Amino acid sequence: MSKKPPLTVVGSTAENASAPPPTLGKAGADLWRTITTEYGIDDAGGREILRQCCAAEDRAAECAAAIDRDAPMGCARHRDRKIIRY
Image 1 (spheres, rainbow, N blue to C red):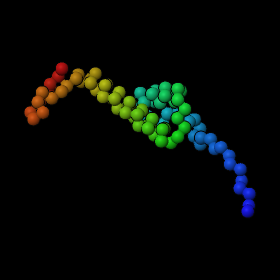
Image 2: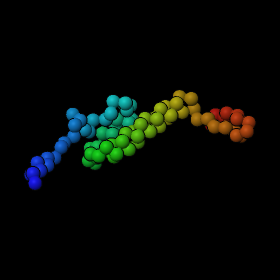
Image 3: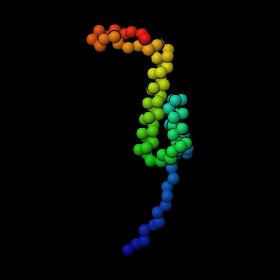
């Protein structure tokens, strides 16, 4: 029986594993840095969940900017679809 080669620990292939993905905006990238500073998320699944959370943070920031710009609006009645400003 032949001898098996010894196992070695393989590190991250990314240059900077804590750097946010380039697709994130400012709000998402800030959240990414905050989370990765406090927690060591090394697995692909955890990083993908974090990426999706950060993308949602970007969308929330975009929506907040639109509300600030256009004022909050809502429908008076669903069937009439009337838009009212608050």
